[in-house]
Image 1: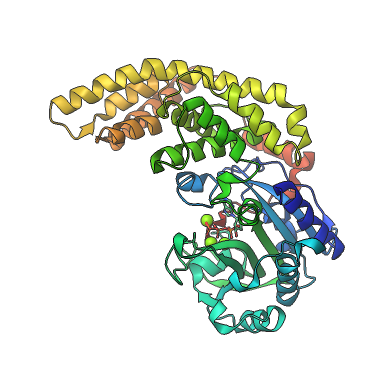
Image 2: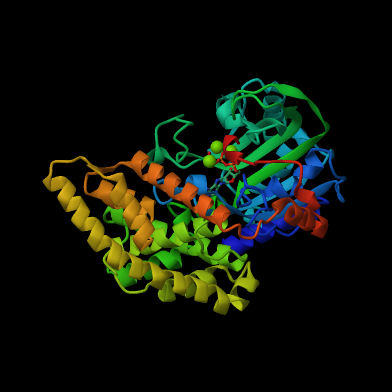
Length: 476
Ligand code: ATP
Ligand code: MG
Ligand code: MG
Ligand code: MG
């Protein structure tokens, strides 16, 4: 089943059950210093959960474009983490609660494909619940007919969701699918790739206080209503239904990987380090496409820097596989074709998108050519003098004079068995920043009052998003 069809069936199932289909919010989150990108379907609905705004509908469903930079180091190494992915979700604002959420989810995953469902093999499915949630356990037995040995109680880290800061929270329950012994040990819930987490159902009913983090906080009391917030990884369901090994091999992603194989002349499935790089290329090119599609452009700070880092990681991976020419003109059109069925606007806007992507690649290739020579010399010198760590001043010079990013210096040094004096690097960066600040003050150049800017923004229709600071979904 094609990914676009899996997505269509999700929305149809919930529309048939009285949910209003709400479009995805764009990837860039509002002007919020703590949240650069939307990382879950519920982000656009937070004010409804908190009772700050009245939801226009009691039930909603969406397929939300998500970006999770904290997962970037997992990409290509696990079977299931993309930087960009799509989260199918259904939401109840004080309407149905645990039983409804479990029933609707179970129906869709187990209904035969000939009847519009996903037709997953019930004997492979497990449910995790928050360890004290006996009510959820009883419901999994009653609604889904699961036996005790297919229900696992997990703790705060896996099965109690909060934003990591004061705000809505609640216990959650997840549908896992057993991928078989080749993906990990029996009942090893933590490893994640054997018992693949497909769908997280959050029973959003409490408000949490500050506490010290994601797992240690106090419950202040009940939210105005008992809500449901669910998130199902579209790519994860796709890789199960398409019977491939991981999310980088699904119909929307694999053609990019295949094109990278052709370009580099490497084979996929022979050596793990090559495979990881090929998957990184496929993932990052698609993320770049979707980010630029949503208006992000490469720059040295904020969202633009995240995009730049993703694109540059892709370029690096291509080069490490031995292809030194510009690769994006070969890869981006393939990524576009993979996404066009669900996102026709990406195809329409491709002229603009590709201009940014190709320009960024060319600029980076030029930077790499000059910087790599200098870095190689510095590494050789460090090694010759018996040092184990590259000087912070070298890393700073590369960054400052040649625009050579620190993460790349770290990576290349590590490949050569060297550490980098990061502390020294950061000290020099901080010194440079305070010099720049002093300079700016001396010039008494344009003082910008950002609160005015923000007030304008809020008047302009972004009011939905005020009132919360951060949405780190990692504790889900
Ligand atoms: P995991 O434990 O596998 O990292 P998670 O618990 O962090 O997943 P949630 O925050 O519960 O994930 O997000 C809801 C759903 O979104 C998950 O059940 C999963 O199907 C999907 N998902 C989460 N992170 C990613 C990702 N990086 N790439 C693809 N799908 C993801
Ligand atoms: Mg999880
Ligand atoms: Mg995670
Ligand atoms: Mg989860």
